Length: 199
Image 1 (cartoon, rainbow, N blue to C red):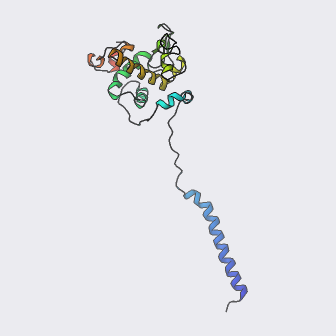
Image 2: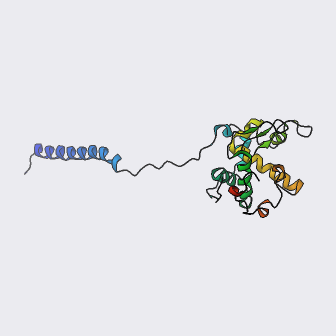
Image 3: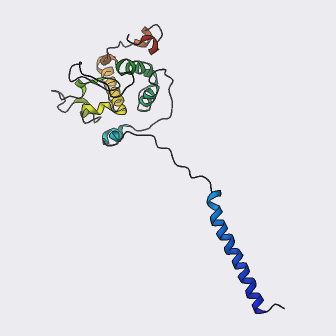
């Protein structure tokens, strides 16, 4: 019959083995744990984040990619901001013709302080006027100054606003960019910017 000392030794041995297993488990477990998944957050220009009214305009970003041959990244951004799919060919052409897809372009020879950014939005839309003392785009809550038009998302949202305004008042959303309403149907290769650059 085991003595009390044998009984204690067995309990200490079992406890030691359990402690050893716990220690080994703590060392090995992190290596066997499933990888930590970090959610993807799309890049956002810090200047866009500083303007509250812009963040409220960008409601539902989409991962739908559109098929265009020129300025594809910019046009995909425009699509996610609300530009309709059927307008993306013309938009691609406008952005290529106006800025060669470069967001920081300023053409100072245009009237009203020149034209800004990807879509070369004229200063008429962001400079104070008799009808909009703070500027039309400022009154729409899209920007605080014309310089904000160098931010791609703001430029594309401003362009969409101008396009919709012109569609309603002129029956041609592309009129501010000197394009006819059925522009894509009128070119030899419909809205293939490589065929009509400079056209």
